[in-house]
Image 1 (cartoon, rainbow over the protein chains, first blue to last red):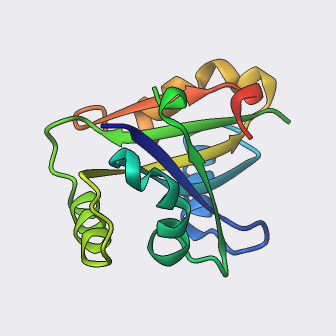
Image 2 (image 1 turned 30 degrees about the vertical axis):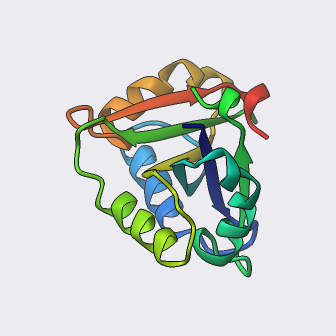
Amino acid sequence: MPTVRVTVMLKPGVLDAPGQAILAGLRALGYPVEGARVGKVVELAVPEALRARVDEMCERFLANPLIETWTVEEPEAVR
Amino acid sequence: MPTVRVTVMLKPGVLDAPGQAILAGLRALGYPVEGARVGKVVELAVPEALRARVDEMCERFLANPLIETWTVEEPEAVR
C-alpha cells in the first residue's frame, strides 16, 4: 500500500499561535531560535487508484485552503 | 538564517486519535483510505551555531521521547 505524506502549513501572515508558543518556550529554555512555524503532517495509506485524488482530499478535508497550503510527497520521498 | 524542519510522529502502536478521526472522515467522504497517522511539523529558523542542538530541543521540548519519534531535515531538504 503506497504511503503519501501530506504536510499542511499555515500561509505566511496567518497568526500561528502554536508556533509563537514554541518559539517562546524554546527561548525560555535558552535556545535563541529566531522563528517557529507549526503545521501538521498526515501520512495516508492510499490505494493506487486513489493516489490521484490526494490533492482533492486536502482541499476538501485535510486543509483549509483559505489559510493553509499543503504539499504532497510521493512514496519514495517518505522515510 | 537556516531553516530546519522537525517532524514529530507518534510511535507505532501509540493510539493516534486525530489520525483515526481523519481516517473516518475521509472514508465518510467516499475516499477508501486504508490508514492515516497524524504528526506535527515545526519549521525553525535557527542560527548556525544552534543547528547542532536541534535534536536536543526535540528531546527536551518539541517531542515526548516516550511516545514520539522525530526527524530533522536539513535546510536544503526544506521546500
